[in-house]
Length: 264
Ligand SMILES: [Zn+2]
Image 1 (cartoon, rainbow, N blue to C red):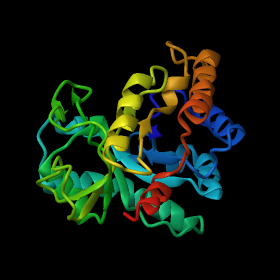
Image 2 (spheres, protein in one colour; image 1 turned 60 degrees about the vertical axis):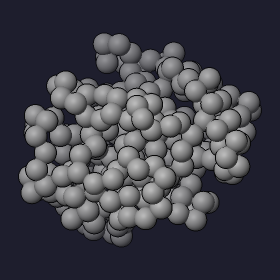
Image 3 (spheres, protein in one colour; image 1 turned 90 degrees about the vertical axis):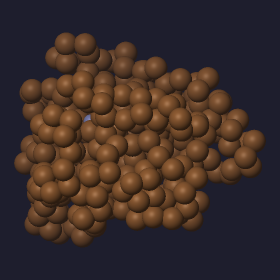
Image 4 (cartoon, helix red, strand yellow; image 1 turned 120 degrees about the horizontal axis):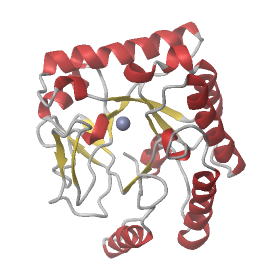
């Protein structure tokens, strides 16, 4: 889960998180979800403490998600480090105060920004797991600054290791980071034909188990006006989970579980 809570009302945000927690517990996914919390923008450690307590109780993974729109497309290691230090420090302080010992190693850049200076800053902060590469796609940040271009990266690739410069070298086996490539962004339009192509590529390369990363956001279960929970979206989420299992024999895991499956 890319934990952007794009909604002004804190109560409504909390509702969207609660509904997701209910869906995940009903479908047996508790403990198998990865949450990338956007602390700098939404202050989960202040506004959504019960939610944090609950995901930690379940054994879900907790990482951090930082959005860089304030840098207007100009990325400098020092400045990014300072910015990302804020979210990490706030989260670590909260965890410590609440008696948890969680080491932050997982990070996702907002809008999948991929930049050497950003990766260098994340390395300085001790992050080792990242998840931005989206094979075949390119994109911009929310203000239209170029964020990434992965059109030359093939689908069906597995997590790989890299350093700050060679983040798209998907056949790399060494490096500070483990990159966990994304198969699908967004909830409703989960693309089954794309998923089939990923699975087929795994089969052709005798990759077993193959890892399919599906990312979406809590705000995607709100209706278009973001005033209330969309029961339609919740139904679609449940049906995707069911179909992934029944038709594609998907086993849902958090990032840590998935990486340990493949010894990464
Ligand atoms: Zn985001």
